[in-house]
Length: 54
Image 1: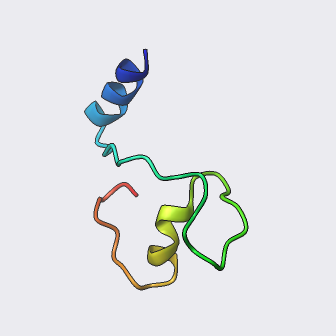
Image 2: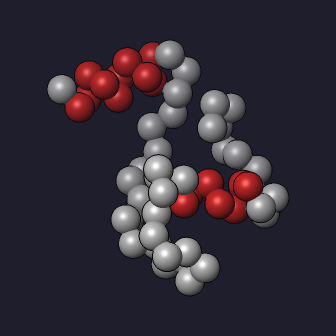
């Protein structure tokens, strides 16, 4: 079922990114919220999004 879910979104232009650990190595964060931790460098302007639909 999970693969069908992923395939659906990939077919609609989304990219499947690798999983991210629940406990962040970032010392500025106490806990993760809504899986947004991998996007922190983009929010801070240190990195450009690597995919169009991120």
